Amino acid sequence: MKYKCLVLDHDDTVVNSTATIHYPCFVEYLEKYYPHLSKNYTLESYFVKNFHPGVVELFVDEIGMSPEELAHEEAYWQEYVKGHIPSAYEGIREIIFDFKKEGGIIAVDSHSFTEYIVRDWKKNSLPDPHIIYGWDIPKNMRKPAPDTLFDLMKRFDLKPEEVLVVDDLKPGYDMAKGAGVTFAAAGWAYNIPEIENFMRKNCDFYLKSVSDLRNILFS
Image (cartoon, rainbow, N blue to C red; front, side, top):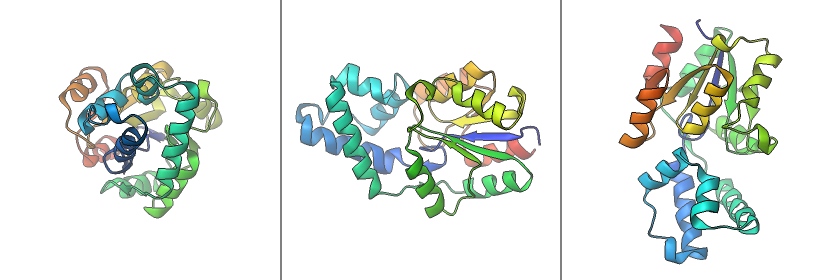
């Protein structure tokens, strides 16, 4: 295989979660605590805000949450996620299984908490990843910082050209670029020209379907 390590984002790359869980939670939270803003965000605009500048920046810089309010929102979101399990995209399980079978290393690098990543992978019968970098790692190491990729390459004795990062959002792209590794944009969660145009212009690969990922891994 060309790549020895596959680094997968979780939300909207492995599982369909923003449309089914995170956005509904966001709207519910606004309706309760920021009702004057509850009609301001469509699913598409929420995707765009997640893409850039990022969800924390949305909460702090645009909505105006204080650190205490941000912590409250995070706790609300955690409680919501406990009762909602996203479904894996069709075909992703087989790709992960085949990659591991061929001796490949699977890493998850996500802004979700590790416990929910583990739960979602088990509930969707996905093969266990070798390592997970979730939201609970030190803040300075989270995407878009490249620190997790440097740690990954050191742990598994990998060269940058042996690593492929697959992510649907710009923080994943920035992380991969900062570490000098190959980046493939996962474009199967939504059809948003603003995001797709950026990814097609800047990324090593743009993957419109899950089967496109299989093609670049095994062809």
